[in-house]
View 1 (cartoon, rainbow, N blue to C red):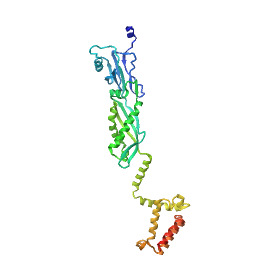
View 2: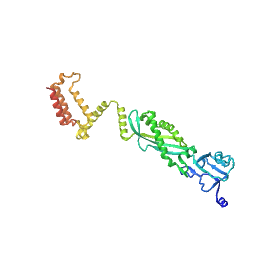
View 3: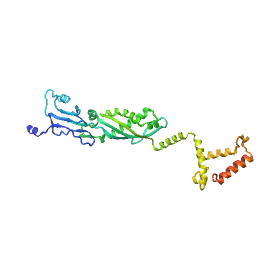
View 4: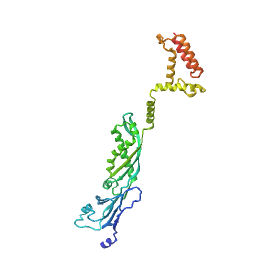
Length: 338
């Protein structure tokens, strides 16, 4: 019976893995009831590494090349199986192949905004995304921490873990750097390099080498981005009061030409605080003759009131002032005569 069982067994004399390009990172050679012949041939291609595992214990690692399996080429497995006393052929052992191809154009990003403390904006939530590439360098670490005894382990299964690793590094990097968001956004290349160095040790724990990392965009939530845009605009304008006066001065002639005057633009003197202030200042200036000192007690002469009312009436005729606004200013001026 033992003889028949021996005859039925299949013996392996060639071990190799032909990758199919489907993104597989780890693949276990199918042993089933088969056993490996002493002197069998092992082929490890240029983009691969091979690892023997004996009863759950990691044994020998093979770099690219062709090998004849003997006690000399399997020193760790020989020790684990005590082959130095009596070599057993054929033998059973798990054999795993690993792809070392560079995994290009991998996407990373913040699925939800991350909260950071910014020097200029305080507590803010930002988003970032980009691409990265990596390759497997340590099959032992990858086997022990990622792929395990599975028949195969694919790149897509690892994507979520790696993306979260990068996002965690991004959060720490912002906190440690103390660089304002506006400077980060303006120097995405340097930011990507710093993030690359921050994340490399995290990838190494899984037996991976992070080859490149590119930050394609860093952005604030829409409402905060609007605030930033307004701040940039204000800095560009400089003196906002002078800018407002300039805008009003330019808009009055055009508004007066339109049917309905300023009302057609939705810009009555009573609507728009900036505009109202500017016109009010202009009226006050009109009451004060050039080079003259203010009248004592805040009163003005009758001639000045009449002259001012004539000017204001002219604005009413041009559609710049409404009748109600003219009447209100007229009452105010008449009080100054008392």
